[in-house]
Length: 289
Ligand code: SAM
Image (tube, rainbow, N blue to C red; front, top):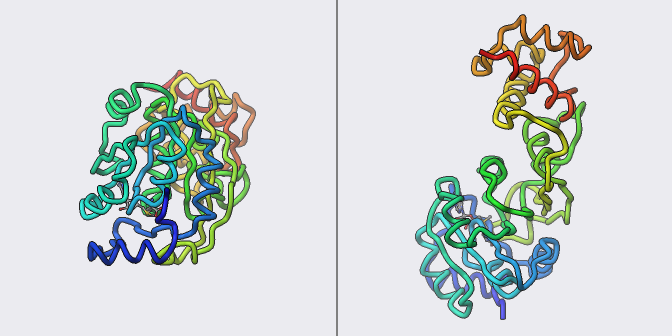
């Protein structure tokens, strides 16, 4: 039985191993059974499922995942947590623990060797200092994942869902919406963690699209265009694209494409929808050097 989702058992195990929380690894451990149940339920895990957990910590959520899923692969960066995880996960023979940095792990190898290339679900209480790179890496690697259910900073969850014309709209909103359908599961108060984070948290589920909502000739180029457009928020889209220097297009080419699309040269990136970015990048890709 999962037994860690409360303050008493969590404190006990931390003291037993004299474990010191590491701020640099974004360590805020969940101590609320209700939230743990909600996350596992929202991830819709069944006994057929293979789950990838990023940052198991002391194994609190891992225990819940191990009981619900067929197999759990957990990747933890902090070597000092491994002996603790060996103890807390000992009752579960369906968990594979990998010590390493998720941003350096070969995701294709992991998918091939651990998940035997079958589709899997990602579930995590993410370290907040690298939320965006982790989400981008998971999607852009094109490993066969069907959903990502994660705890993130509320502000980041907001950025994932918004559309053009709002201050939170940017490269993350577009990338998340290109790859998936985002849905907020629940807001989580700081009192559900130790130590308490000094930001609000939200659980969000990103259900991967079976095919992207727009047609793009070169996905990497689309994301280069999007990043360039938001690099200099207060500049025009044309300046952002030209100043990026990695798109292989001249100012004249960008202006010509905008004219063909019937769009003003003074437009800013934050007003552009995903559909427009797709069209812009397809047209620019055709003429680039
Ligand atoms: N899952 C646990 C829970 O819910 O109580 C811990 C969550 S804590 C917010 C984030 C976890 O991610 C920590 O255990 C931390 O050591 C781990 N972590 C931080 N950076 C990581 C990285 N680059 N790769 C893998 N794990 C990482």
